[in-house]
Image 1 (cartoon, rainbow, N blue to C red):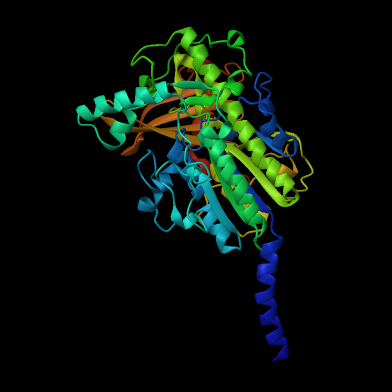
Image 2: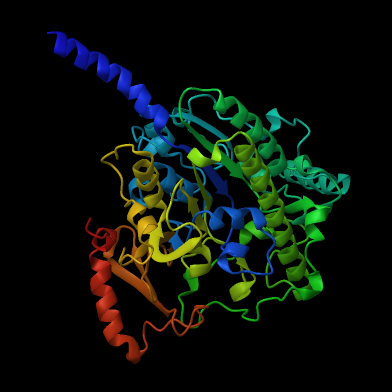
Length: 494
């Protein structure tokens, strides 16, 4: 009897003790960040703080989101489920309406002793999830109520004018919001916390001090919204770049031979001033936008650095996993287009960097194919937390231990479209060499409407769809067979 009592007492004592030994997780989410940063070889970019995470961690050169738009992408990452399982394909649907009982990553970590805190943009705006957090999600304005999207009076005057015009037309809600966008860029000589990311960094720093005092490991999710439109940043970040040195992409067309519906009209950018409502934009304006994107990226990077500096100051770095990801890619004039919203490489490929205490391959990189649904199981395994059964991704922990490990044979993305009265879904399968996209009728997947194939060895810019090229007939057969096996067929045996 005494042995039984001792065993039961040990169970109750060891559970919290085990949780206390687990690593903290600093989860840095970035909006619209393409992998054009120093750590990815973009020497023209000024991103020293993200580069510093990479110097202590691992860079994933071939990481992909599940759908190149905010809410579906973030939902897949946070639930560990693909869009066809979450049924979230747009910016309005909340996953609690489609999969109400799903256990999110921070929710699962809470069950295993973590204190989960979120701030800034983690889920898509207005679609936060109360069950994910140990306390209410924090807003950047908590630390700085004067923080605003724009700092200049003339920018806000444009918004007021457009809003008045939209209201006169009877627009309300999201339609009113979209019709009331301000300038696409702003260069103001203001402190960092005059804008969102500086304010959220302030809040993250305060939160780290609070979390250090707790007797449990933490999951701190910090969501930065730059370089998402509008490209606003304090003047000192604009000054880091010479606009005359910026080059506009020469390619002004969608891939030759691609279906008309595969591209996008980049309507998101057209909501801002003074972007034309149709047609291409001038090279001069393109340079201003690229300059703004670069400035906003460096501004965000500086805020990441402030949070990391506080993590170091508090003595927490040595027991904290740091992971940084961008929710999807972004086009900066390539194909004569902007924004995301396609299945192409520029939109689906994402930056993903992770630093784990004691990792033996710190400062390395891997070409292993990984997906956002892999982040949930990876963080659980790295933290010593059991994996829930619903996950549709695979932990990439073995890749951190061996970056050259033979891994997934493909990564999968998708994007919905409408064409010819049909509701389509384009499924993109990325292998080491090819991007194979099959467009099917959503009501009948056997109804294949179009296929795209891009050979990244010969055409990394995806300029020509070679699906109908006789030279690729054998490749098409092989990839078609691989596609039929689905994403489950790409998962390595463990």
